Amino acid sequence: MGTIGEVMFRIYLIIVLMLTSVIPVKASVGSWKITHYCSCKKCCGKWSDGHFASGKEVYQGGVACNWLPFGTKIVIDNIEYTVEDRGAKSLFGDKNNKIKHIDIWTASHKQALKLGVVYKKVRVVK
Image (cartoon, rainbow, N blue to C red; front, side):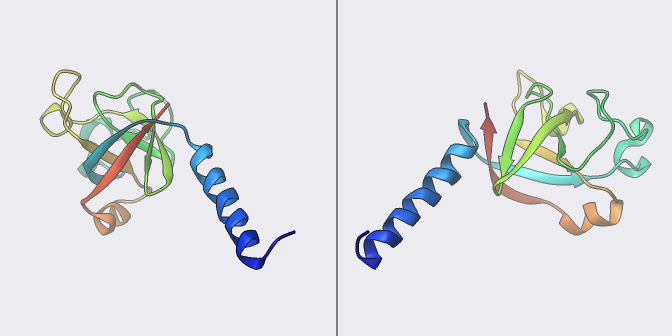
């Protein structure tokens, strides 16, 4: 079977292979501004009806980005999210002005404020 070092190395390789093969990466697009929002009138104004711009009901894991197509999977801190919503062009850009800004939907305004604004690496998944 091998020495304890060889066994540990094999376990390490298996874990690395499992972690790197679960999510195929299309592109690494660097550090983005990450904000958080909820479905309230303060965050969404007249669009605070509990639906994303894609037409789907809001759910944990949905995000806003104006220039990635609906359904695009992105990964932030090893958590997968799906682009389902849009935001103001001045903040999120469009297909001709690709501003690196993701808005993550949260269940409450209090949670959105608590999570605040951060800058993180974002990966776009195939």
